[in-house]
Length: 170
Image (cartoon, rainbow, N blue to C red; front, side, top):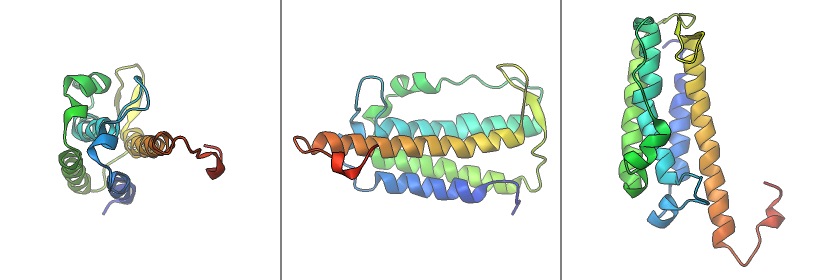
């Protein structure tokens, strides 16, 4: 296994995502704290699509086709276009898990890939393969935080008229 490829965090974070969805019913899975926020279902389906259409595809492009343009993606538009919030949570988690497992197998196949290889970034400048890997791991963490925030907001709302204030500052 390649030391430079962060397989451990990507595998562990996928498990954490699963655990944060354990025991979540359909109502909670679809609930949004406000019109500008995503539901848990939207987060999970976003992660599944990002797994193959964004991080794996772009890392492959950087490593193997650095001068090729990146395929366009629309992660925020896909939330509504692809009806994420109308999907089943269990099936969505399975889809994410299958995509992550495919990514882990692919990452293992890279061997001692040179993470210093870079490619032109669509926003200008260049991006290294290592930057893409670091962003992939960090992206999971951002959405793990989002899932925890959704649990907290759901709990605060569902426990009304009682207060969660004694738990401490969020």
